[in-house]
Length: 258
Image (cartoon, rainbow, N blue to C red; front, side, top):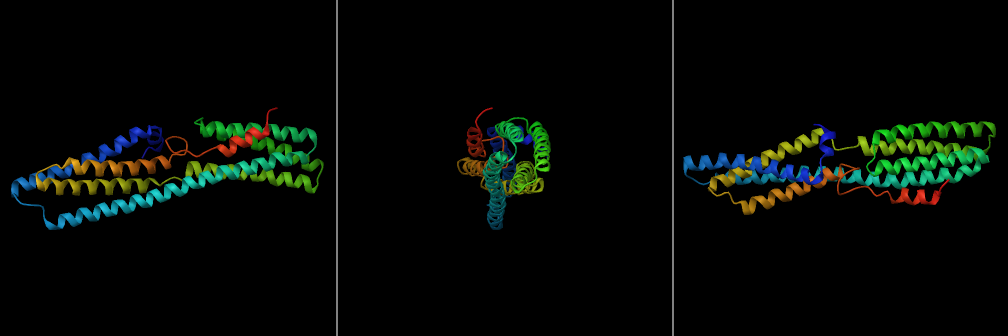
């Protein structure tokens, strides 16, 4: 599955694609059922109803599981934003424990660092942001370690620890945002169960000889909305549901300007 292509699509197009996918397989099932009804001229077998109910129940279970996974990952990303704002804010304050020249340089780097994070979160180039962040980590560590070596003390040790926390927090956010996604295998399983459920539902409807769109379409749209919601939660940068950066914004405001 091409994750990059999938995430580049507008969320409205994702919804339309999911709804169309379900309707197509429902129509395939309807054609099977309708032709069987025409040839045999009888009602749907009694076991077909229970089969449809079982597949729809299985689909609901997998969808609930997937939604829970996406929701927990979204919550983790929200918590990471607050934690990173606190970590950077602590490092910014502890920069005063260094000598004046080193402290000002560290504060300058941290201001640039927050700007990079906010730009990436607002839709900027994430790969470029990661590259720039790694460069600032290198400059921060060089500045802090040099100051700590020149004047070793418990106060400079606190700044060294704060710098370590900033670097570690970067990896936590990158992992949560880019790597902790719903696995492709789960998306494939969800698509397969959805297709089978829609085929079974369409077959049952086809046995009646009436499409019953007034009942099928709302069901399809409801499931499409839920799947779209899961897909939106799984995309931290784009979509209707995004992670608030208010903590980082307030931190940047508190840092002031040069």
